[in-house]
Image 1 (cartoon, helix red, strand yellow):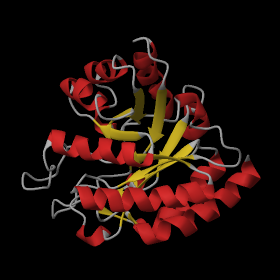
Image 2 (image 1 turned 30 degrees about the horizontal axis):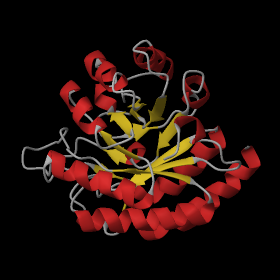
Image 3 (image 1 turned 90 degrees about the horizontal axis):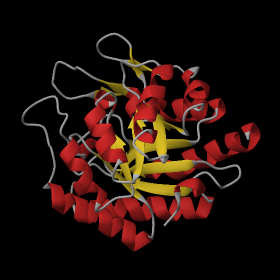
Image 4 (image 1 turned 90 degrees about the vertical axis):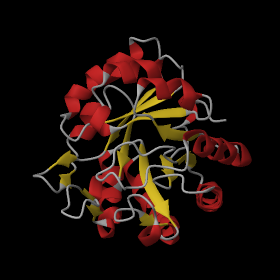
Length: 267
C-alpha cells in the first residue's frame, strides 16, 4: 500500500484518483480498475481507485443511490486488495466515517459538505487520509480552515480537491489562481470531470461538458496541481450516475500521455 508521503514521489508524474462515479456492480468496478491499473503501471503513475458506495446527494428521489452500503464497500475493498492499490470513497454523515474507514484508505468529503465540522472531524479521527473537496461556494483561501479541522484533530494526512465554482445557476468554472493558494495548506488535486458539470438542469439530471476534459486537465497540470481526479466508465451514456461528465475509459491513456508531457516541462 502506498503511504501518504509517497503519493507524490514519482518525478515528472502526478497522483491519479480515478474510477466510476458510483459502484454499480462488481464486474464493472473490476473492469474499470483493471484498465486504469494497467495504464498507470505502464505510465508510472500512482493510482488510487475511487468509487462512491452511496450517492446521498441526488437531484431527484428516483435517482440511483447505490447497491447497498456494505456491499459496495466490500467491492471497493476487493478491488484494492486485488491490485494492491489505495482506494477512496466519499462520506456524507459523521457516522459513515467509521464504517467506510474499515474498507478504504482515503475518506473524501464532498464539496457541498466542505464546511461540516462534525463530518470532517469524524473522518480525521479515523486516522485515514482525508480528501476535502473545495465547496463550489468557497474561495480557495477559506480551505485553510477546513484543513485546520483535520490537523487540529491530530491528523496531518489531508488533501484538497478543486472541483470548480458555481457560475450562475447551471455552470461551473475553475479559477486556477486558487491552485497555488491552496497548495500552501495541503497537496491539491484537480477534479477534472466534476469541474465540467452543468448542475440544476430542468430534467433533474446533471449535465456536463466532457469534451473539455482534456482542456481542463492540461490547464491543471500546467498550473501545478499535485494530482488529478477523473471519473471514467466504459460506457458513460449508460452509467447510473454522472454519465454526462465522465470520461470514456478508452480515452484515458492518450490523455494521460499528453499530460505527462506537460508535467515533464513544468516540473
